[in-house]
Amino acid sequence: MERKNTAIVLAAGQGKRMNSKVQKQFLELGGKPLLYYSLKCFQDSGMIRDIILVTGAESVPFCKEEIVEKYGLTKVTKVIPGGKERYDSVYEGLLSCENSDFVLIHDGARPFITEEIIRRGIQGVEKTGACVIGMPSKDTVKIADTQGYVAETPDRSTVWTIQTPQIFEYRLIREAHEKIRCRDMSAITDDAMVVEQETGVKVALVEGSYKNIKITTPEDLDIAEIFLKALEKMAGI
Ligand SMILES: Nc1ccn([C@@H]2O[C@H](COP(=O)(O)OP(=O)(O)OP(=O)(O)O)[C@@H](O)[C@H]2O)c(=O)n1
Ligand SMILES: C[C@](O)(CO)[C@H](O)COP(=O)(O)O
Image (cartoon, rainbow, N blue to C red):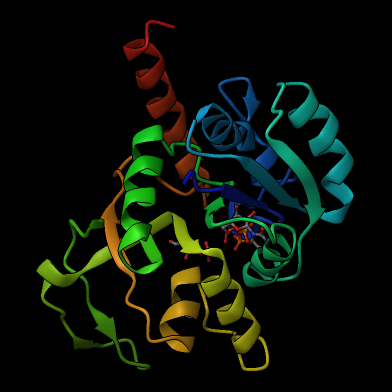
């Protein structure tokens, strides 16, 4: 039976760390809005049935006209307003795709998602119903104490840095979000944490790519321009 896979693409953040007048998801990368690239990857993937785009209420018309319609992104079936925090925007997205089997929750600020990452993620979610994309850490990681000293050094072979998409069975992530919403969510920074804290389900780790960066601060945009040029050169564009 063919699965109904929905991508929820998040683009409702303020981009405070980017410190730019235009929200980072709408900044230009290679002449197109940064947000376009992840939407286009999901659009072109045969594994994705539909896309829910979550953005700021004030940006809904811009997204519909200047991104979805302009670039012919026909799989984007809904453009909806998000919430104050990332997890609020995810929850709004989840309320909009009730008839999905798997949902792939992705940061619109990560333009370098690929078809291969989607494929590995969808394979990974079949294991337990929960899967995150990430990469083994190349750096040694230290846990700090509150005074700014090293408290602990975890064994690097067990440390991964986590990316998106994060992929879940729809019911599992919806119910986990519903449970956690009545508690303090201030320390929740990704979707896997919601499943880790609210269910006994093990979350599978699947390799993404060191190029699948999140555009967070201005230097990330410079790196993204370099990656994009290299990808276009490889594709002969
Ligand atoms: N209320 C929010 C906050 C974040 N996001 C989205 O979640 C992704 C990852 O978040 P992050 O990089 O932290 O984006 P911002 O919240 O915009 O950045 P900052 O924390 O610097 O303000 C981004 O695509 C962002 O648009 C969202 O949809 N809704
Ligand atoms: C979900 C995420 O992209 C995984 O690395 C990250 O945690 C988002 O965090 P942010 O503070 O919203 O950038």
